[in-house]
Length: 268
Image 1: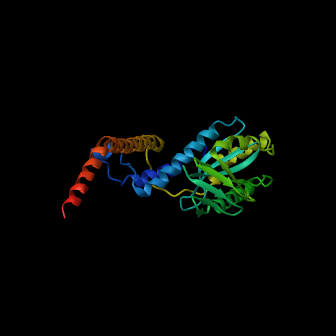
Image 2 (image 1 turned 90 degrees about the vertical axis):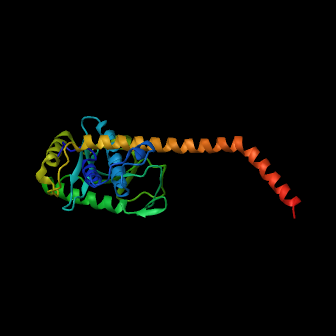
Image 3 (image 1 turned 60 degrees about the vertical axis):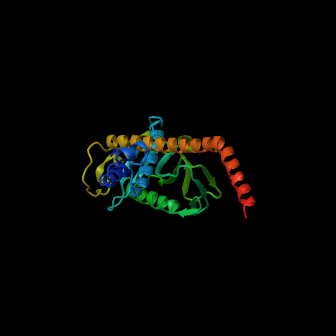
């Protein structure tokens, strides 16, 4: 299980969805039309968020270990990241809300004013993993449910949830390393072996495999970013062109308009 890449499960789902999307023509590529269909965008954003968090986790000291895309149900659901270290055991539910305002209350998380079930889902996820691990290692502490908010414009925590930690991606590493030590090296070694054993986890649903999914995703990601850049450039060009026309053509147009009004008022 330790060979799973951050974001691998969501990347594979994205690629399955994207496989039926028509290829853009030359016009679409030049003018920056997105290569993604509307129903693939959420999968893409999820993949980008999980990969970003995976990079943060890869920078943790060697006594910490991160597992990714672990199957937790029979319908394809997975744990984004499971982290173990001296500070405990953590399920990380990554939520990519780029440029959005995120507000948190005791039992409520809202994104741009819309309530989402992130807190409830994170609690359920951590509870299930706690039960699974304690069946093999009864003295383990409970798993800490965590929601990692990626690239949000703002993160406002009005009231901290009782059982779920809400943390921005930029503060994740610091927060993990600040946890008090509750697991020693022998416990971490045994726990790591348990998590790494496929028999610990439910059997994931079988889907047609994509060869080298992370490589294929990297190509798609470049296409998406290039399209976004070109689309933005064309928009800026349009604004600049419109402003230029207004500046240089505006006064003559105003003068012509005034002349027409004067001529019209002189002729009954």
